[in-house]
Length: 181
Image 1 (cartoon, helix red, strand yellow):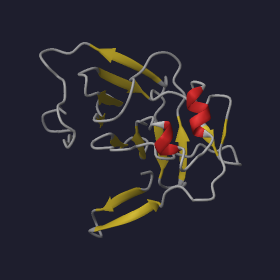
Image 2 (cartoon, one colour; image 1 turned 90 degrees about the horizontal axis):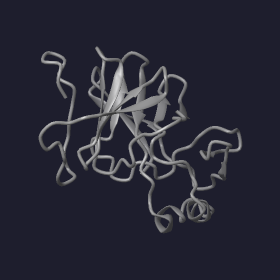
Image 3 (cartoon, helix red, strand yellow; image 1 turned 60 degrees about the horizontal axis):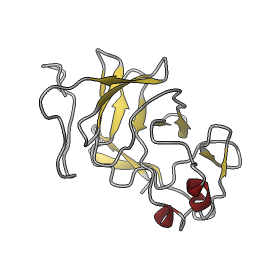
Image 4 (tube, one colour; image 1 turned 30 degrees about the vertical axis):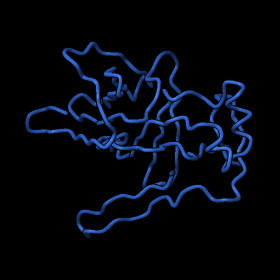
C-alpha cells in the first residue's frame, strides 16, 4: 500500500513511478521521528492504507502530495518490525506531516510541520487549489484544514452545515471553472 502510479493522459496509460517498499529495506528514525533509509531519505511504508481521495497534485510545484495514515502496529510490523516498538513509544511522527513525491527526481520527501494539523488521513479528501496555492484537507469528522507549502503549516478552518464524510469510497476534485472542491 505504498506504490505510486500516475496516469499519462497523452499516452492513455498508467505508469508505475514508485513500485513500493523493497522487502529488504532497513529503516531507522531520524531526529524528526520520520522513517528513513540508510541514506537518510524518508520512505513511505504502508503510509496510505485506503487512500481514497487522500492525494493531490501540486500543479505549481509539480509534485504529488498525500497525507499519511498511521497504520496499526500489528499490520505494519510485518514490513518494518521495529515500527511496533516505535509506535508503542509514541513514534513515528504523527499524521500532520505530508508526504511529497517529486516525479522528476524520483524521490520522496516529508514536510515537517511545527504546530497543529490534521489528526489522520483515513477516509479523507485532499485537493490542491491553484489560485490559493494551498492544499485543502477534509477529514471524515468534518474538520477542514489548509496547508501552506511555503510556511509548512496547517490552518484549521470553520465549516458550515454538516461537512462530515460518510462511508469511504468517495472522490473529490477541484473545479477550476467554478473555483470549488
